[in-house]
Image (tube, helix red, strand yellow):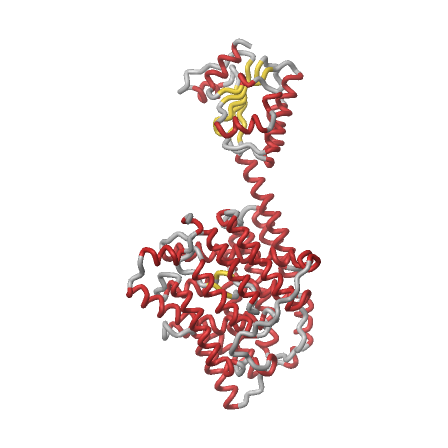
Length: 548
């Protein structure tokens, strides 16, 4: 099997895993499983679905991503990045729509992997990622105000501005007990591990607040009061029916889930690589993420991806191989089977406090401010994706953001293409060819092109060459530093040849590599130019120009 499409676990098992490494993985996986428990429940509730769906996702996706993934230490499951998109899909299409969109996204992710797009997704502009994550952090924060303050609003609007309007209208209903629990949770989550490093502060906060609310009958909303019991089993109901109309209506949300999941999982894998000095297999990771989402949907879960915070926790606690991720999933399964009935007593204000900390860590406000001091195009991408995500819709923001990123790429690639005009009289000729013992004849103009001649640079290339104010007898186009030409570039080249030939000027092309020479044949360039005028080296081109 191709190494690129071999799961890391398989490679590591083939090489052998020591008892010491296995021991570290079991300990780390157990700790990460405990850390993931409150997050899985909190992410599910914030996404507008019942708590057990977060647990199911963390268990199923966590195990599959570790078994099939291309990273040694990646931990998969539900993440804060999906809260916004999942909530929006549930509001518009219902739970069945979310299930189908997640299922479709899984196949799209597998397609990304098989098409080897993993390496490309890693090059999404940083300004785009910061715009998304900062906006998502703000939306997560705003979605938790109701439970954090104990306002008791039963139906919170999904629209950002409407949400805050409702909050301001209900500030008179603030519950002091809920605020105390939420603030205490934030403090414990942030600072408890400074005292006891191996014990997550969020777990301590859940235990203390749940016990306090149950013993003293504190009047705050709990999971039970809003969602009822948490099942301690998998409820595999019938999968929603899919038809063409359903696929058409959900294709945009499915692509948004796939793109966001792919970006976040690969970003998490890159971060973990820097921590362990490893190298993940991008395309295999995407395939694993796709499989995880397919089975998560089939078993009643929600979208999943690589979780940066849990992956970092795994590394910090000694996780070395995907076995740690498998153990994390099994620990969550054991907790679900044994302790799910007690989880219903967790106060929602405690979960709100945990998510406020998640939002803070996601906000990347320092990077946000830093990008605002950068180039104008980066600022436009950052603010556009941020505002579209907050005020409109994450799906729209992803679509517009990717288009803007493409324009940024085209602009920068176009600027990288350089075209030099060299004549017999110009001083540049001596400098350029001083090591080649080459003299450009009179009535000959040479154009040196550096960079890929693709659609973003084709117009600049065409205008620069055809707008010459002299009438030479021959034009040499030197392409030794042109690695590729796309269809638009070839069309521009054909137009240039036609323009010069109409003026009685012969065109000679020099420095063409084997790949471009085959493309010349394919795009019909030899119908416009004599094949003998397409040469490999500049000396031959100059000699041919002398006898024209």
